[in-house]
Length: 255
Length: 251
Image (cartoon, rainbow over all chains, first blue to last red; front, top):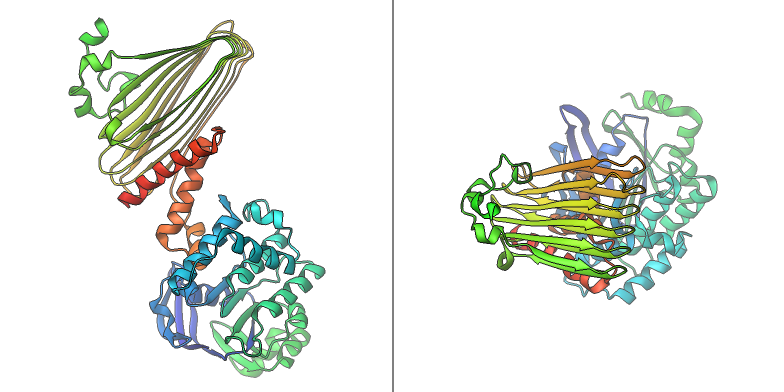
């Protein structure tokens, strides 16, 4: 679904990604782990096309398209969702208004009919309930006055409503207590696990810790260090990282 | 008659940010024309003014607001090379003046609100919220003077201005001017100038909104403040739509 080949990227004048190669197949939940400063968030923003994150080499193919040719909003319409580590507050714009316009913009770009106000509210209620977020919160302005945990749950409600084909989740587990972590993990499973007969789905799950992976069981785990993937394995790699630390794994991979 | 004899220049404080060429071309008769409105004690009256291309130029309104009365003006200034809404208000005891205005414009247009609010007697209140959205070489101004007379105790007056510059080259000016001769009063004023929040725009793009769509949502949120106190939802929507349509036509 997603094929990244020899990706180089800079932020300002600093080289962050250094020949990153990674493939995520349809149906796969692929966890990316790595120490601070390895380039995890940069990878997420490069995939999302954030201004200031400049690709200086390599290619990214997403569902048969050249991702780097697409503007950020076109990537969303193509089915890519970016879950932010720090969701942005937008005073004066309600979640309901924002998400309905966003969903209908995406549907329009795919030549699908827009959802009516009633249809949208029904969908929003269903997804808010899934993430146990009070529907009243969705009537409030986007992320304004939300706690850290509420922002992360609201991100997942957005993902549920937009129903993307592929999600890049950047430390969605940070700032969550144990219970919220479980709710969010179940939400990811429910929204992003490929279903029998359903469309292809995939997830790139960026995380520091193994905890979220206990609920969202990854199919593959890769270690990102110094801007490159230095090891890839099955779920057991995450457990090994938790026990032995990054340094041991990285030493073994001879970075 | 002396008013008609001498045209204002930019040396006059109240005309400081006006367009010089427009001032020189002013018709003295037009300048001398004030619309006088008197609100009886206890009366409430509201006026929504759209100053678009067909209503460009200088508009001067003089309000005398009786005891306990409430005067409301909401305005969208979207037209003309130089368009100015000038309001002089005199408040009697316990009266209230509510003002909400937005200016929008590009090219080299100048659009401005100039208000003088006289708290002549005790316990009167006033609240003014102005939002200015400009691009090109456009300019938006808010000159707001508040005079609190010597015995106008318990006056409560507030002014809030925010400018949003969509392009380099646009500008806004805010000139709050407070003359307070009473000692038990509250007068608040604030002014800020900024650009569209790029972090918010990227966040919105990541959810599928085009640059035009995110700008429209953010501008709508920005100017909405000026009409919060307008409790007629249809009128509020009408003013908002006029403002947003202006933006859509030119950007």
